[in-house]
Amino acid sequence: MTRSASVGSAMASLRSAQKSNAGAAAYSRFVNRPLGRFFAAVAFVLRMTPDQVTVISAICTLTGIALIAALPPTLGTSALIVALLVLGYALDSADGQLARLRGGGTRRGEWLDHMFDALKIATIHLAVLVCWWRFYELDTAMLLFPIAFQVVANVMFFGFVLTDLIRRSSPSPEPASSPQYRLSPLYSLAVLPSDYGLLLLVFILLWLRPAFVIVYGLLTVANALLLGAAAFRWYRSLG
Image 1 (cartoon, helix red, strand yellow):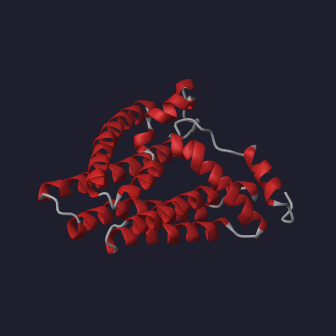
Image 2 (tube, rainbow, N blue to C red; image 1 turned 60 degrees about the vertical axis):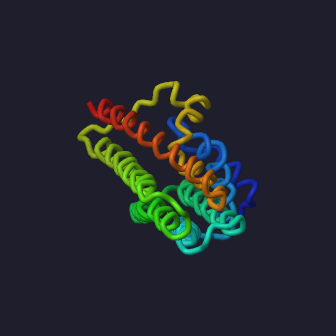
């Protein structure tokens, strides 16, 4: 596609160059990828590179994470945090789509994208921990929830990346099989608790402290259960 293409024509081209929806959770599948498609088309028309989009995504996300720990939770700060995190996540989808629109990504781009992903996953629950410690009046034992969520999120991300790396590095790599049920919208809803996008939306409750603690705690438990199921599936798939 020529660089003089319009946003509309760029989005039309992207619709035919999407990743498979197999295994994708509902927010990522139905909200974030379409948002990322729009931002990718805009970036293409503006002649931006995927790495530039990645850096802007990281700035938005890391600013939102820093505000979780730095600002007292109010309705206004909660809305600002959600806006920054949602924008950062959409741009995180846009960089890969922009790379495909430009003819393919690079190893450096993939590395940069994964490094920022690892950074956000390694910090967002620590920010919640600091927020609870500074601004919430909670029993000390409750602080175990963000610590546990941090462990689960890091292991989930590492397991996903490691499984993909082992598959690709095998002597005769074969694409991972995707049972038909993993393409179903119902499956996308079933794994929604593990969706990073859902977590971002939950931060709108940050100023409603009891509600946020309850929902965040439930997400912690759900993600721990889904990690167990995913680890079992990854292990079997490598057999």
